[in-house]
Amino acid sequence: MANLLLCSAVAGGTGTQSLGTRLTVMKNNCRPHLLATIRLLEPTLVISQGSAVRPEIARSVAIERRHSNEVCAARLDGRPFAWVALHHPAFHWDWLARPYLNTVADAMHRGRALALELADAAG
Image (cartoon, rainbow, N blue to C red; front, side, top):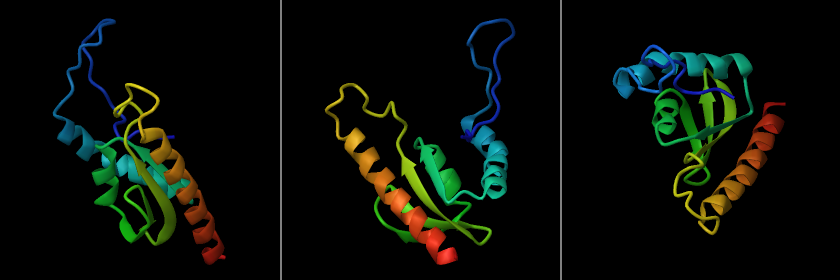
């Protein structure tokens, strides 16, 4: 598990007051580290959560085939992987009857099947 933002800037002491730079600056500074993590681990399945993460990964990988809004086959430096891009779990998390849980379950099943397919194709 890795986060897009690997840094934080908080006021001294024990408070939670953020002194962070604009989110765009932090994302630009941290994106290379997230990509380095993916390169190092060589995963067959990448699961991302959060609307801020999707464009950061999408601008850095080659999307080869989209299977749904959440699932696609992608490559980073020639290495294929299945990518499941989900909203953050808190997205519309006000009651359990929301379709988000069904979306996640379906996307995870599709992503796993795609990851196995890509691994078989790679030999």
